[in-house]
Amino acid sequence: MAQASVKENEVDIVIGAIHPDLTSFMNEWRSVFSRFHLIIVKDPDLKEELKIPDGFDVDVYTKSDIDRVVGSSSSISFSGYSCRYFGFLVSRKKYVISIDDDCVPAQDSTGNFVDAVAQHIFNLTTPATPFFFNTLYDPYRKGADFVRGYPFSLRSGVACALSCGLWLNLADYDAPTQALKPGERNARYVDAVLTIPTRAMMPMSGINIAFDREAVGPALFPALRLAAEGKFRWETIEDIWCGMCVKVVCDHLCLGVKSGLPYVWRKDRGDAVESLKKEWEGVKLMEHLVPFFQSVRLPRTATTAEDCVVEMAGTVKQQLGPTDPVFTRAAEAMVEWIRIWKAVGLGSPGK
Image (cartoon, rainbow, N blue to C red; front, side, top):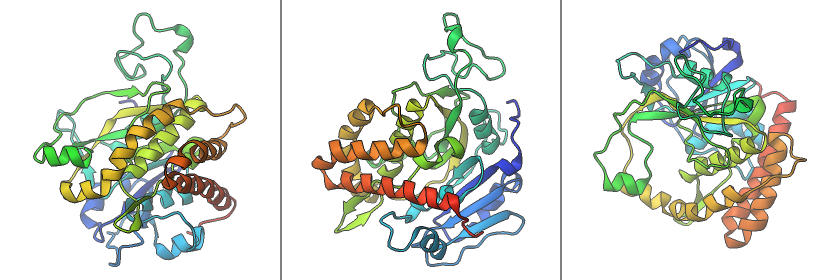
């Protein structure tokens, strides 16, 4: 892989801390993480003190920081892995990379250590090709090019704004699939990156992603909140919703989204049956959400990610709101997120 010409001070690595002891996780990633500034956001529901080893350039944000920056009365929740979004909010870097604390570095098919950060940066700093599919996948990689018949007028590509990495071992299956295949693990390392075609939706996971914060940062947010067990909870459909929103924004702004490398190794955890109880409402909603997002078109007057999110919020409220109040709340949260994003951008997170 060619080295991308990005300075280390242009990158933030965001870690949502769901587990109190990050010692093993951080040490596994030391050779990579020690070169960059880290933003660790503690799950506001986590009571224990965080354990973080020495030797890292790190800012830690806790519930008191979230309340100070966002406001304790905000309708936006950063509980659970949603806390990673607060890291996106307070970052000041061009590129943000997010890796969950249950993931460790993977090995490629030859046993070599995978530098996930380097691959994400390479994805973001080489063009994407969303308007015509190249059957050799990423034509900008060493040893690849555009295939016969690919229009020369499209070969310059467009800027890539979002890089969605993958997982070895515990694949990001939904709860029904996990329950039906409890012993299945992903051992296939596919050495490929592809651009998601324009107008195609994909199920984004925040487990292992990177993005150009200047281009699409405002479009990555915790907005969809589902009601469960008599109280509001943020469940796994949240980043699926976010992914479809940011894909619509990228399509509208002529930006690219890539999927494939880099891989991380995701540890086994959780209970599929318990997850199914939390996810089921989201599984049903997906059948209605995909056609909606496939049909969304934003006006030409929306020229920034902030504009796009506000416009999309209006469409969500108008078209989906009457079917379920959860969508009205999501639309309101999207508008509030943009207000907070702009306010934080004018000030300082204080770290």
